[in-house]
Amino acid sequence: MKLRYVVVVYNRFGGSFRQNVLSSLQSELGQHGTRVDAWATEAHPTSAIELASKAAAAGADLVIGMGGDWMVRSIAEGLRGAGVPMAICKGGTGNLFGNVYTGEQEPKALVAMLQSGYPQPVDAISWNCTDVDGEEHSGISIVAVGFGCLLDAIGDADPAWKKRFGKAVYAHNMVKAAFMPKMVKAKLHKANALPSEKLSAALVFNVPPVDMPELARGCNASDGLLDFVGLRASNALDMAIAVGSLWLTKNAGDHIVSFRSKRLVIELNKPVALNIDGDKGPITDKVTLGVISGAANIVLSA
Image 1 (tube, rainbow, N blue to C red):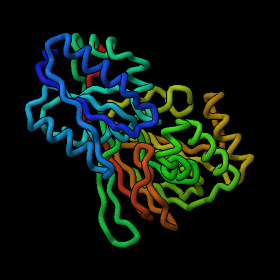
Image 2 (image 1 turned 90 degrees about the vertical axis):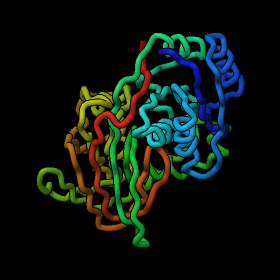
Image 3 (image 1 turned 45 degrees about the vertical axis):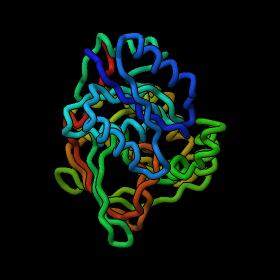
């Protein structure tokens, strides 16, 4: 790629953000004759979206999101329809998309990839709901939309603690939540209505963790499908068996319900907090999900 002007949008509060990595990235790009601007996000949740849109309007050839999955989603949303590609430099606590598709890349290797690589179309999950106060919400997800005690443990994690202790905060909160799973009755509508399920947690994902074979099942972020996985775990023992099965085997048995679909409506018997790519979202009892094919153009490999 010919990169005359690149904007790096970074989250200085990200769990693995390092100023020296940002400086090195700017230096490596500069050595190739690229003009580089680095813009820090503000505290409000749409900051990265607005900065990505601003970068496209300013004529950037590429926008690099430096942060976690929230950053990847925000940059993708800000660039939708602009015709400007994006890339990823991991710098957050949760870097699932980056871990799956880019691995560990030092700035020099990342810049080399950008010089010889090309943008690839990546799907996004569209979601919309009405919250408990009657306000409508909608957006996209690059990794997953979910709900339940394990997702609450991630979404409620304190940013200051994440900055200091990284993923250990997630692990601590999830272990606590696993001892008190709260069940919710869910009606799952795809092509037709499925039987109701009692679930303690559920994920509709676009990018599966590479170390959970039952979730991966050959899916990828450009297959045009939603992947649903629900945990039927009413107590700590069931939760341990279900999560252990996901990590250690390819068959999670009766503790898991899973399927694929292009569109899905989830109706719940009580309001839950949605989790959007690891961040807490609206509280609702119904959410509609779909697939936006090729929603983002991301440079992932040479």
